[in-house]
Amino acid sequence: MKKITVLGSTGSIGTQTLDVVSMHPGLYQVEGLAAGTNTSLLLEQAQRHRPKKVSVATKELAEQICEQLPPGTELYWGDEGLIEVAAGTEADTVVTAVMGSMGLPSTLAAIEAGKQIGLANKETLVTAGHIVTEKARKKGIKLLPIDSEHSAIFQCLNGERMQDIAGITLTASGGSFRDLTREQLKDVTVEQALQHPNWSMGAKITIDSATMVNKGLEVIEAHWLFGLPYEQIHVLLHPESIIHSFVEFKDTSIIAQLGNPDMRVPIQYALTYPDRMISPAKPLSLAEAGSLHFREMDYERFPCLRLAFECGKIGGTAPTAFNAANEVAVARFLRGEISFLAIEDIIARVLDRHHNTVNPDLPAIEACDHEVRATAAVL
Image (cartoon, rainbow, N blue to C red; front, top):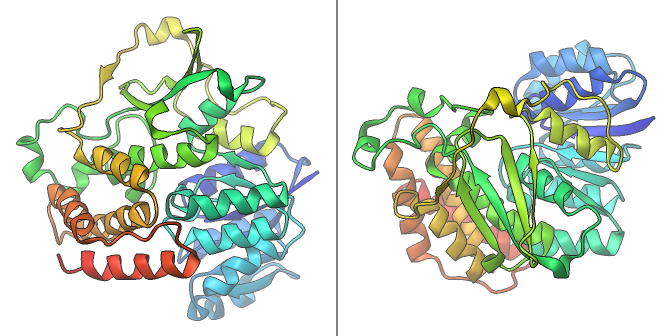
């Protein structure tokens, strides 16, 4: 029986992870669950899976639910609680599915404790890829990607030699507004932006897909996961989201991973690796799909993706600044404070002001993150 902990258990990836666990009773023991403020769902999960430890966002929320937890379940809260649930259980694997840069300390704590990582928090590698990958290497820990694109590349590389790679291509659906012009984007609403054509995801990542920030974060994450220079990482628009990503080798052969858009497939592969099991996802029928379409990426239409490539190549704290500015801008858009196009404007203005730190340590990363958030909140 594999023992797992899920950080961000009430979010989209977290709930689907627990769906996979429920599909295979007897194969998994849930050791820990960490959530934010959705305590009603967390309590349902705790009653079903009987974890040893749970954590919520605040002490006040913890006091509200403490008497409703199953007997023997320990309760924690805040940043320290998240770290305790990440590192302080007997879990073999920790699925890191919390949103944003707050996932970094808990992921590092889990690695330090010797846990394998099912990585669904891309900001961890975006903001501190050099630190996380080096710590994982020293501890002999695998970073098993859960993003569908990175899982696809990971699967395509099974048994292959890195020196034979010509390049990798991450596919992008284009998000909610892939067929709109820049002029048409000026007046789009939050409700329209949240209507992703292919995937069921949380609000923040759905907005990131519409701006193509999400793909930019994935490019930076791919650089760290696979040790490839940015010149070997490409993005292709693929509206159907059937080919999740592919690898081209120096002999011109291409290996791709295909499937219907269902996050439970990459989640399950991260949990069962190197084995495969029957999935709850609908099998892909290429005959039903009929035809697949591809378009070159337009970096003028999607300037956030261009900025992500630039920040990745610069390195240092530039990716941290990119990510922090975006998180603040997206939150402001979701609150109705700014327009959709103002998201990319805020990111660009923050980066124009950013003074890069090369090879930053954690305090430097945290300082950059804090400073950028304060700036982006008032631009």
